[in-house]
Structure formats: structure tokens, C-alpha cells
Amino acid sequence: MRTLVIGTGGREHALARALAHDPGVAEVHAAPGNPGIATVATLHDVDPMDGEAVAALAERLDIDLVVVGPEAPLVAGVADAVRARGIVCFGPSRDAAMLEGSKAFAKDVMAAAGVPTARAVVCTTDAEAAAALDELGSPYVVKDDGLAAGKGVVVTDDRDLALTHAGRCDRVVIEEYLDGPEVSLFALCGWNEADGATVYPLQPAQDFKRIFDGDRGPNTGGMGAYTPLPWAPDGLVEDVVRDVLQPTVDELARRGTPFSGLLYAGLALTSRGVRVIEFNARFGDPETQPLLALLDSPLSPLLHAAATGTLADVPAPVFRDGAAVAVVMASRGYPESATKGDVILGVDEAEALEGVHVIHAGTAESGGHLVTAGGRVLAVVGTGADLATARAAAYSGVGLIDFDGAQHRTDIAASASVQTG
Image 1 (cartoon, rainbow, N blue to C red):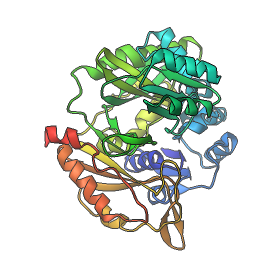
Image 2: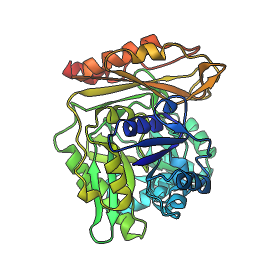
Image 3: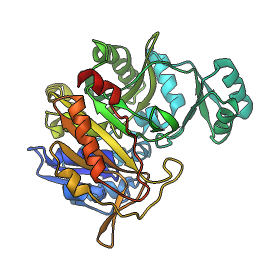
């Protein structure tokens, strides 16, 4: 199979790496990619937001499977443009991707499908936002309705800060606060008219959104993740498939916009049961990195089957025993800003460690050096027999990498690894 991965970040590097290790894949291409992806794929300088250019590239390369990584191209309809050329593409249509593209749309779908989630009010004026904040109370949860690269959410006890964030957005969703630990659950979804929707869940992971240790500071795109979750309640995955994922994709199909691709459910395990925090319409970053590090099934048959409506004919994904931990290294100023052009040292040394590999997110080549080119620069992934071993491997790798202003959290998977170490 000849494959083409669309995107520039850590998620796309992890996907390209998994495809490169897949015995059923002959070629891996990426557009536009990054220096890390270049070690496992052939890069092409094509704008990932230009659906016609992506489709033309896939046609020229005689690609068997296009994988659209980021949310913005999906919401812009890039997958539709590729499929219009008769090329198999993993990723939902523009209409189905609105599950991520609009939080108000996602709330409407959940309400129709009976999916448990936080009470919410959609606001377009300061007066509406102020009223919603007073109605739902503190802590205040204010979400930009549209795409915001994981940084459009404010959770605060400061009403003025919440109102200021709402005022910066054209439309916001203000929600009740959900208590309890958070879980990320991904599911591969396929659909055909005869059988309806097929949902294959992956194993749960946990993401760390805040910039600083102890879940302090502003939200980011994610500072680290790990899998599996030793503390997850028995039956969690089965319950979420039954109560959240299957009803959601069934409702989208009922509306005439069937979902084929990767559906991500961000969940809160509250005192009142599981509640959906948000949906994403693609692999999450950085959870994809540890999940794919443990995936024992070849990736290409799963993605191809989801894209062609034959997912039920392919065995469900299987994961290896053990654990994986990803620690993100970010540039100075992130998430408010990001420095670029700082030389990165030690990546090769980190990758030489047993059980460690490094995923590139915001990197570039300049003057023969690897340099920073974004907020989240690298994710160092450690694997091992248990979480404590995997965590130690990841942080050993982090300790060997250096660039000016580098920042990372020191507590990724810390409490969970104590339970298993």
C-alpha cells in the first residue's frame, strides 16, 4: 500500500512512523511533514489546507490511502476533495467534522443522541455570556465555539477573566464544571449503508492539558500523555462505546452525515457518572504517540477499512502488554507565544536509549541544524513493562535533549506510575 499523511505535527509523525513499520505499507509520503517525518517518509511541499492540491498530489503518486491528520483541513473539507477524485481517504467529511469544528453543533448532536454531557449555554453577546456565567456558576468553563488548537478553553474561578475570554470569541459555549479525572478514548469508526456504523475503541489514555506541574497554568494543546490507565473503572470502554460513541455516530448517520475516521471523546469521570467534555474528529495529540507505540495491530488495514466502510471485516485493534508515556518539550513562552530557531541538541542520544523514541512536532532544519519551529517542539516517548519503567525511560530521554528555553512538565503519569511501579 502507498500512503500519504497530511500535516506537520507530532500526531502526523506518530502516524507516519506506525505506517512505516507496517509490513503492508510499501511507501509512506507526507505533505508537508517535518524533519522527524522525513526520517520515515518522503516529503512533499503541499499546503495541507488546499484540498485540490492534496488530491492532485495523491493522484500523481498513485496513493492507495490518504490520512488527514489535523482538524483544520478536515473541517475545511480536504478529505472530501480527495474522495471526489476516487482516492481512499481516512478522515471524516467536512459536515461530520463539525463535531469538532463547532462545540455548539456537538452539543446539539449529543442532546439528540442522549449522550451524557455538561449543561451548556451558547452565547454570542457579552450580556448572554454574563447571564450564562451566573446561571451555571463557578468554576466557570468558557469554550470558543470554533477550532482553537486546544487553547480555546478557560476554566477559572475569576468571573472577569471568564467574561473577557468570552468577549474575545465570536461565539462561545459556557458549560457547567465537570469534576473528576479526565480520560481520552479514541475510536476508529466506519460506516456503510447495509450495516450502519462500526466502532472499534482503542485503549484509554490520559492527557495533561495545563502547562505547569500539578495541572496549573493555562491550557495547552497537551503537555504529555500515557496509556494504559490502571485506575480506570472496569467496563469503562464498553460503557463509553454504548452510551457515547455508538449513539453519536448513529445520530450523525441519521442526519445524513455518517462519520468515518477517528472519533475522540474527551471524558470526565464525575461523581454522577461519565460525561463528555468534548469531541474531536481526528487522532489527538499527544495521546496518539503513546497509543501507537503500543499498538500491536498493523495500522494500515484499520485505517483503510474505516475509510472504505469495511471496518467490521477487519479484526479489532490489539495492544501489546506494557505501558507508554509521552512527555512534551515546549519552547519558551508557550502557550502564549513560541520562540523559533533555537538549536535542538541530544535527539539522537535520546533515541539511542532502550525503549525511547522522539516524535517531532514543531521542528525545522536551518543551517544544517535541527531547530525549534513551534510551541510544542518534541514528544519523548518511553515504553516499558509498566508505567514506572516507561515513565523513567521517557524522562531519561528528556534529560538528554536541550534547546534554549525548553520547558516540560515533570509529573506526567507520576501518580499512576506509583500505583503500578
